[in-house]
Length: 231
Ligand SMILES: CSC[C@@H](O)[C@@H](O)C(=O)COP(=O)(O)O
Ligand SMILES: [Zn+2]
Image (tube, rainbow, N blue to C red):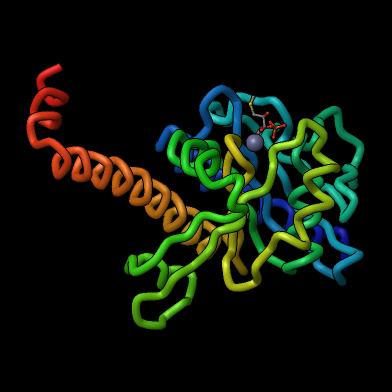
């Protein structure tokens, strides 16, 4: 690839990440500097690729010319820079190596944290009969899916080594317990669609659980529910 084309690919990737970053920041999806984003720039093979990733520790609601850098398949910067790649770059590397994706988006939300904690012991979050499952290109009637949940080890390499085994190729996401979700897709448009669908499903599971709990309480003792609503 000529230097000019390489520069063009890099600028296109940075612009794509910038647009998604602005959008997610406006949704409040980067609390406390959390979250990281990446898009593939040059894919040779599962062991030879370059992608653009957010720099570590930055306030992702602030947008500057120093928000992104290029890294290789090991997560090492490919150009001289004072920027540090995301602390979770190794997880992106593993997802790219395993899935050959075009973009990976990671966000922390209250819903993905609560639901992943509830289902960590099971190892997956079951969801069924929700129309938005079709966002994952799963079209069967009343489909049931299992979204993988991994432990949130403090050492990122320990998480990274679980990624390949945990991934279900039909489900474009994994969740770290009480941490956040990584959603990916063949390109930025698809990764965003998947992330939005996952977040919808987590909120759905959360609200349904609450509703069913209240319904059970009501069935057991109708006055309980009344007492709860006025307390
Ligand atoms: C400050 S809490 C979030 C971090 O621990 C981490 O989980 C995260 O998502 C952001 O890390 P970063 O290194 O900025 O990409
Ligand atoms: Zn994180």
